[in-house]
Image 1 (cartoon, rainbow, N blue to C red):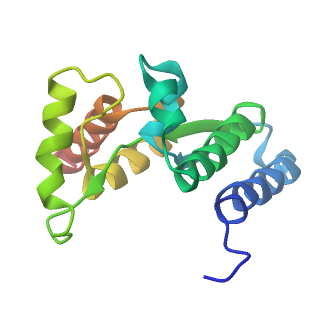
Image 2: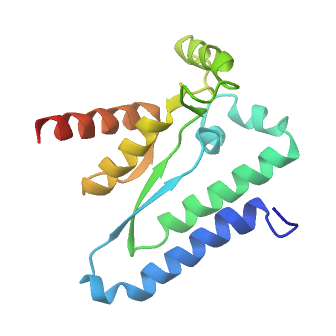
Length: 164
């Protein structure tokens, strides 16, 4: 990455370019909303969670910039009537091949199970991918999808694939 590789340029500007292209191409699609999936972050929802603002206030600057870019994309999606916004907000994303994160998986999941308000259950990358495909396929899926919705969409896609 170079000095222009900021969270804002990579996340916000890229999404803005895509959203503008969709808006410009909208008439050829018959005026229907185009599904647009975006992987945000569970932490983008901190302002709406108990103790979330306090946790974010103490977050490092890089995390604040990262979350600002994610929230900016979420806001742009919500205000663009050419798209059906599907915003995935996973917490820690993992798989069995990513050994460096495996030790913290139980910590996140236990904190979530105990009701720590600003900690979401972890999500396997395979489930996130299935949830994205499922959300794009199902026209009623829109808005923020947190870990329960991600797990449900992944399970639904897996079930429909198994029966096909």
